[in-house]
Image (cartoon, rainbow, N blue to C red; front, top):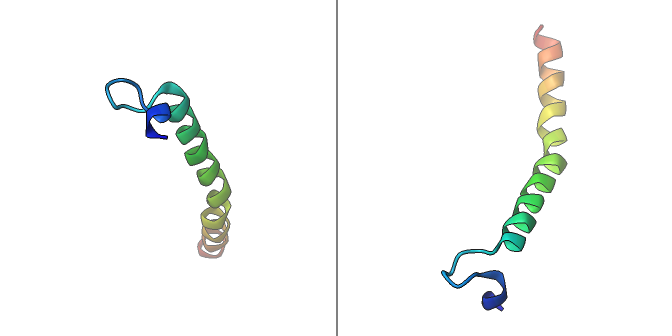
Length: 47
């Protein structure tokens, strides 16, 4: 299985890197509202 995800030098191939980047971006987009909404509420009370 790892052979398909890695190139000859043992580094992740381009497809694996792109997939990992998309997963990270997706997680950031999904979790951002959980941080931003309370922060905006707090700022609106403080200011």
